[in-house]
Image 1 (cartoon, helix red, strand yellow):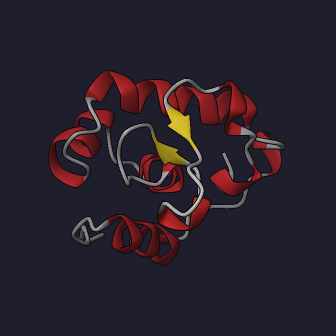
Image 2 (spheres, rainbow, N blue to C red):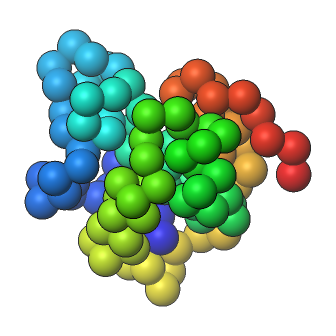
Length: 103
């Protein structure tokens, strides 16, 4: 997978962009959770259950799974995607207000 800013989220019913909300970045509908935060944390090995229950309350396990699946299907070049950058995952968590998970 790749940075979710490279993903066209327009076909994902679980993600929206709201002008003026979280700098108009793609967010989980009805929340301030960044789609990028969900994707990056999933790439680093965090399960949908952990994402929904520990990192992003209000996300929901099934919605986390749908967002991850959408990102995997719509990543521009999944085979060429770089490795996981834990600092990037941490930064995404901080933007979304989630506590840092130790490696």
